[in-house]
Amino acid sequence: MPDQKPISDNTLCLLLLLSILANVGLVSSKSTIEPCSNSDSCNALLGYTLYTDLKVSEVASLFQVDPIAILTANAIDISYPDVENHILPSQLFVKIPIACSCVDGIRKSVSTKYKTRPSDTLSSIADSIYSGLVSADQIGEANSVTDPSVLDVGQTLVVPLPCTCFNGTDNALPAIYLSYVVRPVDTLTGIAARYLTTITDLMNVNAMGGAAIKSGDILAVPLPACASNFPRYSSDYGLIVPNGSYAITGSHCVQCSCGPGNLKLYCMPASLAVSCSSMQCRNSNLMLGNVTVQQTSGGCNVTSCSYGGYVNGSIITSLSTYLQPRCPGGQQFPTLIDPPTSVVRESMFAPSPSPSPLSDGAGTTPKSSVVPTTTGSLPGFPPASSPFGSTSHACSLRKSLATSPSALVLLLFVKFLLSMSL
Image (cartoon, rainbow, N blue to C red; front, side, top):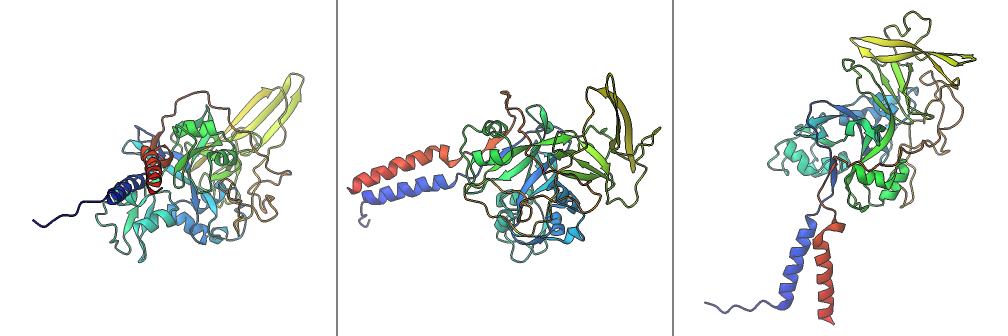
């Protein structure tokens, strides 16, 4: 047997260091999931950053959603000519409304399909085209891809996307949840400030043991919203509109807005309507969205014609009369912005951007009857009441590096090597 040279101490140290680094490298981003047990779907939002300049219709095609739904979710004025073909700039952050289903016991969206192109890889699809909302492994698993290096051009892939609903509430108030991909410059404090919530609330929702986050983590961020109470058999059952935005429903005949003064859903006829069923309340001359008030010695008599959902091609309206202490003021509407043409660069400590208005920073009033002209700007809505100690049913997947024991071992080992070299 030939002589074998003994392994030096330096070689042993190097092998140990490589082993530790390999274990550290296995630590990946964490994501929040919501267990579920029924087949119901719910409304949720994705936080998406454009990887290149894209038309509104192209963004909509990536997620198989209505282009108008993307515009309204981001309070973008849809009265602009040919707005669906407006080119949105690269790196713009937008909210994408999606249906969140219950699949294999957890909440996720599986309605998105992607057709592969010649230069595509699972990693480029996940990290670039869908901006880190999904991983290459998740796409591969969802499509039973055995060799990720070989993709057929034109192959249709299911893209599983993260979403949560938590019964449409946050601290007992209406809320819709945004799946947000953490950027390298983000902090939990900045994210909480941006979305008008608290660090404690974010930690509770995402079942976090500490405030440490890392780039690529996907957080569920609760946004205050206006919830509907339409009957289960209506096609727009479960409609929920984030505060400061609006939605088009009822076959593009009805516009429902939320805020800025309260979290009460307000619906009225939309200007997009081409052929709509009657929007007049029965036994009344009031149309959908009309409100009359009459001050009396006992208070204020209020009569309103409200939207009750879209059923079998018909717009359901309901007339209600009630007495309240004071007469309400005029209806306020969310401030609309022009279709964005550029991205406002933020400082490195700023939280994640939302769709931004033009350079003057002011929202615009609509150029059509989509939303009646109002005065004043959209004030910040106060955050929901602070968490009252309820336990989140969310599950936080995979430990972050900051809490990994291997990171501590690595630190101690480096110190040991430094002491050996002295």
